[in-house]
Image (cartoon, rainbow, N blue to C red):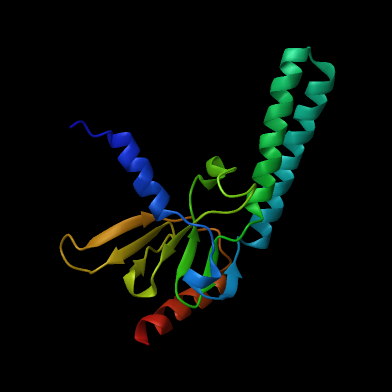
Length: 171
């Protein structure tokens, strides 16, 4: 019997990503977003590029206009995504924004963010760059490294998140 590896991988990927459910994850205690300066600067860059693409769409031939319009719509989606929370701190689990989740745009509602749910006891540590999360036991072959988009959190959110994870692991 032949096994379709891509299908198995995509099914596992879908199990690893989820949208927020109050019944499963508990109440949202707080949301951690990207730092204000990062969001503002990136939004301005996206808006400037979007403006240029719209101007190109008005003055270019029809085919270039369509391509420019589609690129401008994508940049508007990027502006929307940069304002979404990166981490949802819930009663029962920590939800971290899934990388590339905008591809799954129309799966369960337009613009609904996807998260990787993690139980607090699974978290073994966070890298100093805040780009990797270590899951599992700190033994040989026991830890799993998960790439996470936490590098642009504000310093206060980082401190508060570390304290909360430590507190939840102690209880």
